[in-house]
Length: 482
Image (cartoon, rainbow, N blue to C red; front, side, top):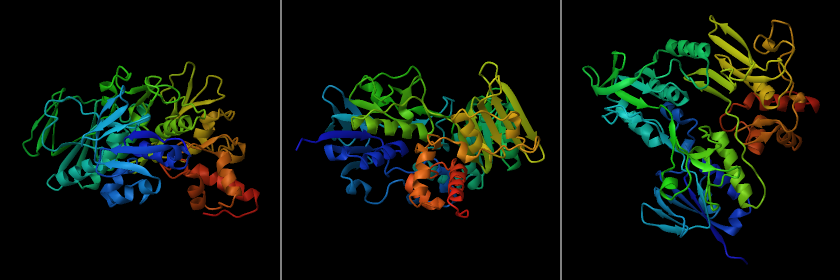
């Protein structure tokens, strides 16, 4: 019997755990001793739904690791022990507690850290970040003696953090440097509609604000002073202005990193050292870092395939997303800012219902290039499939956001989707895989989720999975089943 190799994984976040889940289902563990370093005091948990912590969900309920997982699969876990150095010549990893482990292959899943702008005073009392469960515990503790909380950052993470402050019964402000909320995903009108809906919830939004200093407040613990001369008193300052790749280990051992950070990887997720891989938010592919979980999962699957000796390739990922931010439904697909030459834009706004929709289509009106949905995201699944599978648009593309205008069929029939159509981007589940599971007897959503994992992560594909299930059951003569 051949001697086992040693596979070391640094990082136990969502992507790192997904990588180990895939290892556990493969033959790799039979030929490798698998060792994991986890810096945090607890195993991997669901960061996507982190704000649920403030509405009663416990840290244990957020966990992504089944009891006994590491023991059952023979994986050694060093919990609460940070990897601090890599010796590429000796092929060893050394930890903060003094462990030195030799590796044959090394996977970096070190994730990212919150970006804190270098504002004078950012280190003051009750200036916090929103990233880990320990951060959430610190926020909850500070909230006990606070009245006002302010989030620095009006993007996806910032609005999630604002929801947390609201759940703690604080008067909540959002301060954003850009002229609109979610500037990367939304156009001006979409950002304006999102702002209206959030302000109607009781949050005060400040856009186009550059914080010059944080100092003592007269009525609150802190006072934020803006470059335009305005001031905002707040007890808690919660930084949620983006993330930065954790690439310090890679830098220190001489791996190639990007000019703005991130560990450079190729299509097999290998770094500049053929024995070291990088996956998730720490990785830089084609000058792009991904802050979403689905691309990280795709990288993890690629590395597992490569370690098995098979062929897999990571060639980028779709960053379309559907979210519920502070109870407000928001979605974006593809080229939301119509940067494609010749792109045509259709938009619909209903002030009474607080709904905004925008389509970006090709110059010949044949293909969908992008979409923005605020307030009503019921069309997201349909639009995403048009986009991902290059399905030809209706004669009047705006029927996709104005379904009754031309009395035309606008909802995409699941039967028109090819078997290769990706239904769940988080776990790369195709329509063919869903149909196969249904044919095998999975005739409820719960059974389908268990069998395929579709709709079990971010949940954005739930409606589409249900429509495929209903269509397949109808073909078999069954009534619709929940």
